[in-house]
Image 1 (tube, one colour):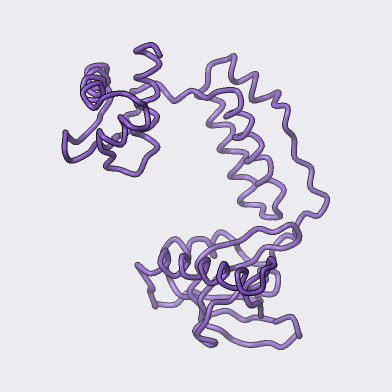
Image 2 (tube, rainbow, N blue to C red):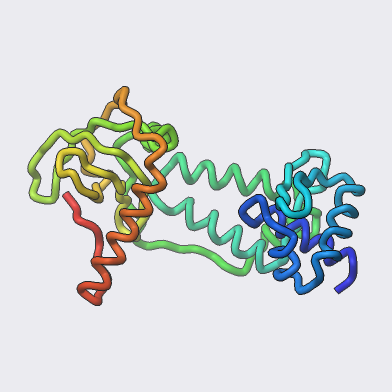
Length: 240
């Protein structure tokens, strides 16, 4: 591997791995000595890369807009365009617009050759079972998750019974035919999956469940896996 290729790969690893990333981990990933990593980091710094940290503590990449953007391999461009195209067909208007905007921004930073590759990707998406468009404001729902704020919702369950719930919204799960809101239900004192199209209004509350969202979501996923192991067939979480 040439030095320029090695420096590019090192920059990619520092950007992508959870910081701070140690020289030992970088050396193992690149199959070089730690001494080589130290020298290459100094070379990157001399070229303008803002890499914080030192030997023994690990390194963190501080992005600098003056640096040239990352480039992509052709298969990476295919994965990127395929993923964003799939998002546009998930029945979520705001998310679809965000995917289109993100692709435009990414293409604007690429060399002309890679722009052509992305514009003429060989992988396409065609979904025949697009989930129905939600009747509630998905942006406000996402904002509540970002802020880790409890919501009071009106919900019509699969048996058409209507209830009022206070929930801790954790994540949105996009399926082939519907979109599910994964949440902790304070009424049931358990994890629940709610059909977004069955939520009949919601309002924000003054209750924060920060910083519990990540740990609750992790527990939710583990609960799903435990259910799968018990029945030995795919299953979903409890739905209302």
